Image 1 (tube, rainbow, N blue to C red):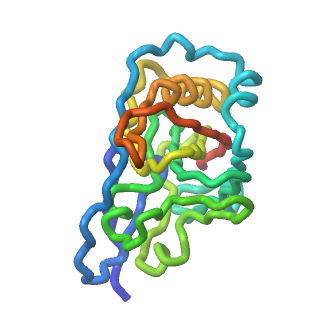
Image 2 (tube, rainbow, N blue to C red; image 1 turned 90 degrees about the vertical axis):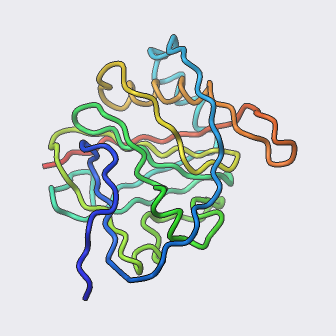
Image 3 (cartoon, rainbow, N blue to C red; image 1 turned 180 degrees about the vertical axis):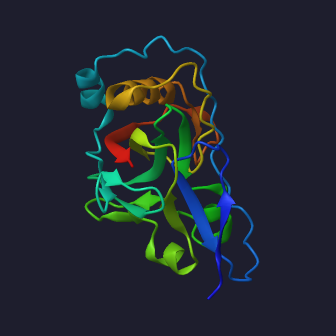
Length: 215
Protein backbone atom coordinates (compact mmCIF):
# COMPACT_ATOMS: atom_id res chain seq x y z
CA UNK A 1 0.00 0.00 0.00
CA UNK A 2 1.53 3.37 -0.94
CA UNK A 3 2.45 5.59 1.96
CA UNK A 4 0.69 8.90 2.50
CA UNK A 5 2.60 12.13 2.25
CA UNK A 6 1.61 15.72 2.96
CA UNK A 7 1.03 17.65 -0.25
CA UNK A 8 0.03 21.03 1.09
CA UNK A 9 0.62 23.07 4.15
CA UNK A 10 0.58 26.57 2.74
CA UNK A 11 0.26 27.98 6.24
CA UNK A 12 2.19 26.08 8.96
CA UNK A 13 -0.58 26.69 11.50
CA UNK A 14 -3.23 24.92 9.39
CA UNK A 15 -5.24 22.76 11.77
CA UNK A 16 -5.76 20.08 9.12
CA UNK A 17 -3.22 18.50 6.79
CA UNK A 18 -4.41 17.24 3.42
CA UNK A 19 -2.69 13.92 2.71
CA UNK A 20 -2.40 12.23 -0.68
CA UNK A 21 -1.50 8.56 -1.08
CA UNK A 22 0.96 8.32 -3.96
CA UNK A 23 -0.82 6.77 -6.92
CA UNK A 24 1.66 7.41 -9.71
CA UNK A 25 -1.03 9.16 -11.76
CA UNK A 26 -0.12 12.40 -13.45
CA UNK A 27 -2.14 15.36 -12.13
CA UNK A 28 -4.73 16.90 -14.39
CA UNK A 29 -4.42 20.50 -15.51
CA UNK A 30 -5.72 22.94 -12.88
CA UNK A 31 -9.32 23.99 -13.31
CA UNK A 32 -10.12 27.64 -13.99
CA UNK A 33 -11.09 29.56 -10.88
CA UNK A 34 -12.86 32.81 -10.27
CA UNK A 35 -10.76 35.94 -9.97
CA UNK A 36 -11.72 37.77 -6.80
CA UNK A 37 -11.10 41.43 -6.14
CA UNK A 38 -10.77 42.13 -2.45
CA UNK A 39 -11.86 45.36 -0.78
CA UNK A 40 -9.56 46.90 1.81
CA UNK A 41 -11.98 48.27 4.37
CA UNK A 42 -12.68 46.35 7.57
CA UNK A 43 -15.02 48.86 9.15
CA UNK A 44 -17.73 46.29 9.77
CA UNK A 45 -15.76 43.74 11.81
CA UNK A 46 -17.84 44.19 14.91
CA UNK A 47 -21.34 43.62 13.57
CA UNK A 48 -23.47 41.91 16.23
CA UNK A 49 -23.37 38.16 15.52
CA UNK A 50 -27.19 37.94 15.65
CA UNK A 51 -27.49 40.45 12.80
CA UNK A 52 -24.74 38.72 10.83
CA UNK A 53 -26.42 35.32 11.14
CA UNK A 54 -29.71 36.71 9.91
CA UNK A 55 -28.12 38.35 6.90
CA UNK A 56 -25.58 35.73 5.84
CA UNK A 57 -27.24 32.33 5.93
CA UNK A 58 -30.07 32.76 3.46
CA UNK A 59 -29.21 29.37 1.93
CA UNK A 60 -29.61 27.68 5.35
CA UNK A 61 -26.12 26.20 5.22
CA UNK A 62 -25.47 23.62 7.94
CA UNK A 63 -22.00 22.29 8.80
CA UNK A 64 -21.19 19.14 10.77
CA UNK A 65 -17.72 18.09 11.97
CA UNK A 66 -17.22 14.33 12.31
CA UNK A 67 -16.73 12.25 14.34
CA UNK A 68 -17.29 15.05 16.86
CA UNK A 69 -16.43 18.65 17.67
CA UNK A 70 -13.68 17.46 20.02
CA UNK A 71 -10.79 15.98 18.03
CA UNK A 72 -7.34 14.64 18.84
CA UNK A 73 -4.07 15.45 17.13
CA UNK A 74 -3.42 12.70 14.59
CA UNK A 75 -7.09 11.79 14.23
CA UNK A 76 -9.01 11.83 10.95
CA UNK A 77 -11.98 14.14 10.45
CA UNK A 78 -14.60 14.77 7.81
CA UNK A 79 -17.28 17.38 7.20
CA UNK A 80 -20.90 17.21 6.16
CA UNK A 81 -22.61 20.26 4.63
CA UNK A 82 -26.23 20.74 3.58
CA UNK A 83 -28.03 23.77 2.16
CA UNK A 84 -31.46 24.59 0.78
CA UNK A 85 -30.00 26.39 -2.24
CA UNK A 86 -27.47 25.40 -4.90
CA UNK A 87 -24.03 26.87 -4.32
CA UNK A 88 -20.28 26.38 -4.30
CA UNK A 89 -18.71 25.31 -1.00
CA UNK A 90 -15.52 26.63 0.56
CA UNK A 91 -14.30 25.50 3.99
CA UNK A 92 -12.18 27.92 6.00
CA UNK A 93 -10.38 26.95 9.20
CA UNK A 94 -9.52 29.46 11.93
CA UNK A 95 -7.02 27.68 14.16
CA UNK A 96 -6.41 28.02 17.89
CA UNK A 97 -3.97 30.88 17.23
CA UNK A 98 -6.57 32.82 15.23
CA UNK A 99 -5.00 32.15 11.83
CA UNK A 100 -7.18 31.45 8.82
CA UNK A 101 -6.73 28.97 5.93
CA UNK A 102 -8.89 27.54 3.16
CA UNK A 103 -8.85 23.76 3.51
CA UNK A 104 -11.41 22.87 0.80
CA UNK A 105 -11.10 22.89 -2.11
CA UNK A 106 -7.34 23.18 -2.40
CA UNK A 107 -5.38 23.80 -5.62
CA UNK A 108 -4.00 20.26 -5.39
CA UNK A 109 -7.44 18.70 -5.12
CA UNK A 110 -8.71 20.79 -8.04
CA UNK A 111 -5.73 19.75 -10.17
CA UNK A 112 -6.26 16.06 -9.37
CA UNK A 113 -9.99 16.11 -10.14
CA UNK A 114 -11.75 15.72 -13.47
CA UNK A 115 -14.89 17.38 -12.11
CA UNK A 116 -15.47 20.96 -13.14
CA UNK A 117 -17.80 21.61 -10.21
CA UNK A 118 -15.97 19.68 -7.52
CA UNK A 119 -17.42 21.89 -4.76
CA UNK A 120 -21.00 22.19 -6.02
CA UNK A 121 -23.62 21.63 -3.30
CA UNK A 122 -27.15 20.66 -4.34
CA UNK A 123 -30.25 21.56 -2.32
CA UNK A 124 -31.14 19.01 0.36
CA UNK A 125 -28.25 16.67 -0.52
CA UNK A 126 -25.47 16.28 2.03
CA UNK A 127 -22.05 17.20 0.62
CA UNK A 128 -19.28 15.20 2.33
CA UNK A 129 -15.65 16.38 2.54
CA UNK A 130 -13.55 14.50 1.62
CA UNK A 131 -15.82 12.96 -1.01
CA UNK A 132 -15.64 9.18 -1.61
CA UNK A 133 -13.74 9.71 -4.88
CA UNK A 134 -11.18 11.89 -3.10
CA UNK A 135 -10.80 9.28 -0.35
CA UNK A 136 -10.06 6.66 -3.00
CA UNK A 137 -7.21 8.86 -4.23
CA UNK A 138 -5.88 9.11 -0.68
CA UNK A 139 -7.08 12.56 0.36
CA UNK A 140 -7.68 12.71 4.09
CA UNK A 141 -7.83 15.39 6.77
CA UNK A 142 -5.49 14.67 9.66
CA UNK A 143 -5.70 16.82 12.78
CA UNK A 144 -2.48 18.68 13.57
CA UNK A 145 -1.41 21.24 16.21
CA UNK A 146 -1.89 23.80 17.59
CA UNK A 147 -4.21 22.44 20.24
CA UNK A 148 -7.01 24.53 21.73
CA UNK A 149 -10.27 26.06 20.56
CA UNK A 150 -10.67 26.59 16.81
CA UNK A 151 -13.43 27.45 14.33
CA UNK A 152 -14.52 25.90 11.03
CA UNK A 153 -16.60 28.01 8.63
CA UNK A 154 -18.63 26.72 5.69
CA UNK A 155 -19.03 29.40 3.00
CA UNK A 156 -21.54 28.86 0.19
CA UNK A 157 -21.19 31.07 -2.89
CA UNK A 158 -24.12 31.60 -5.23
CA UNK A 159 -21.69 31.97 -8.16
CA UNK A 160 -18.94 29.55 -9.14
CA UNK A 161 -15.99 30.20 -6.85
CA UNK A 162 -13.38 27.61 -5.89
CA UNK A 163 -10.48 29.51 -4.35
CA UNK A 164 -10.39 32.54 -2.06
CA UNK A 165 -7.26 34.63 -1.68
CA UNK A 166 -7.82 35.06 2.04
CA UNK A 167 -6.59 38.31 3.57
CA UNK A 168 -3.82 38.49 6.14
CA UNK A 169 -5.10 38.70 9.68
CA UNK A 170 -4.66 42.18 11.18
CA UNK A 171 -5.41 40.69 14.59
CA UNK A 172 -6.29 37.38 16.21
CA UNK A 173 -9.85 36.24 15.62
CA UNK A 174 -11.65 35.15 18.77
CA UNK A 175 -14.37 32.54 18.48
CA UNK A 176 -17.41 32.05 16.25
CA UNK A 177 -18.83 35.57 16.41
CA UNK A 178 -15.54 37.28 15.58
CA UNK A 179 -14.65 34.91 12.74
CA UNK A 180 -18.11 35.09 11.20
CA UNK A 181 -18.30 38.87 11.43
CA UNK A 182 -14.87 39.25 9.87
CA UNK A 183 -15.55 36.94 6.91
CA UNK A 184 -19.02 38.36 6.35
CA UNK A 185 -17.62 41.87 6.09
CA UNK A 186 -14.74 40.75 3.90
CA UNK A 187 -16.80 38.72 1.42
CA UNK A 188 -19.27 41.60 1.05
CA UNK A 189 -16.44 43.49 -0.68
CA UNK A 190 -15.60 40.70 -3.15
CA UNK A 191 -16.54 40.87 -6.83
CA UNK A 192 -16.88 37.72 -8.96
CA UNK A 193 -16.83 37.50 -12.79
CA UNK A 194 -20.28 36.92 -14.27
CA UNK A 195 -20.31 33.66 -16.27
CA UNK A 196 -22.02 35.21 -19.30
CA UNK A 197 -20.71 38.77 -19.49
CA UNK A 198 -17.38 38.40 -17.69
CA UNK A 199 -18.08 41.59 -15.76
CA UNK A 200 -17.25 41.75 -12.08
CA UNK A 201 -20.43 41.60 -10.05
CA UNK A 202 -21.52 41.29 -6.44
CA UNK A 203 -22.20 37.83 -5.06
CA UNK A 204 -24.45 36.23 -2.48
CA UNK A 205 -22.70 34.30 0.30
CA UNK A 206 -24.10 32.11 3.06
CA UNK A 207 -22.27 30.90 6.16
CA UNK A 208 -22.39 28.37 8.95
CA UNK A 209 -19.78 28.24 11.68
CA UNK A 210 -18.81 25.55 14.19
CA UNK A 211 -16.39 25.75 17.07
CA UNK A 212 -14.28 22.68 17.75
CA UNK A 213 -11.55 21.70 20.17
CA UNK A 214 -8.21 20.07 19.37
CA UNK A 215 -6.57 18.02 22.12
